[in-house]
Image (cartoon, rainbow, N blue to C red):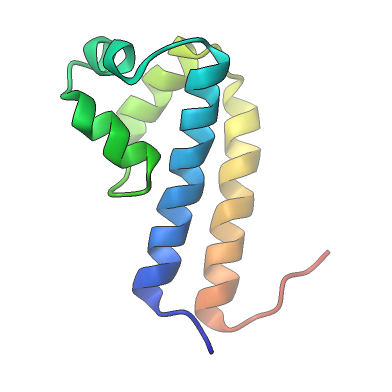
Length: 96
């Protein structure tokens, strides 16, 4: 059965959230430290890392610097996630 658009979007947000959770842990940071850095409530970080909602582009840019992540690496990852999402929405098979 084909996933619904809503579940596909949730999957996409979860993939990106997991990416940033992994980078946060690799940087040795807590969700509270990240929240303080961004000036947001820690629940916002928790929610975004679990795919509940999404991060703004401004926050993504700040987090890449905070975690010392090459923006090109994130772009490559994000493009793959978005390609999978779009192909699923269109009912297309993944290419190699």
